[in-house]
Amino acid sequence: MNIRNVQESDYDRVMEVMVEWWGGRDLRARVYQGLFLHFRQTGFIVEDARGKLMAFLLGYLSQTFAKEAYINWIGVHPGHRDQGIARILYERFFEVARAHKRNRVTCGTALENQASLRWHQHLGFSVEEKNGVYFFSREI
Image 1 (cartoon, rainbow, N blue to C red):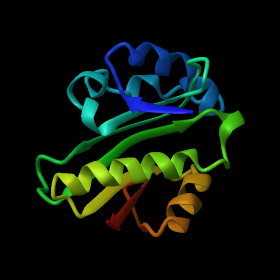
Image 2 (cartoon, helix red, strand yellow):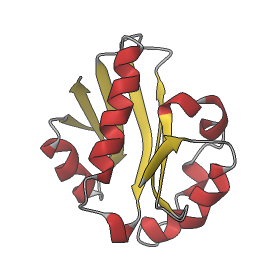
Image 3 (cartoon, one colour):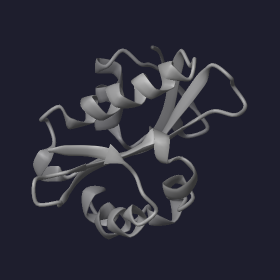
């Protein structure tokens, strides 16, 4: 397993798997291509030994809240879930956030994504429901 920072060329690779990895939901229009260009330091790609995409995380350091970092997207190939890959990506993101003097990580998900709700609670995130979205927050 190889973890590296995202590159602009990874956008197309992620778009190719989005519908499958999200169980048929087409959320591709919600993934901002600029995340792959302007936020490389806080975005990660996980590949297997042959270079096949296993997972990704897209996040950024908040410009509005000086002590926060935000995880915008995380996806893990369905065949590689429950192996700790998402946790590893979160820890990598936490390290970058701490290095930039951030002490809080936030993210969100749709109400229908109960697996994400349970997972974030398991990782120690607090949850707030607002405007049809679960918002998660955790001190790091």
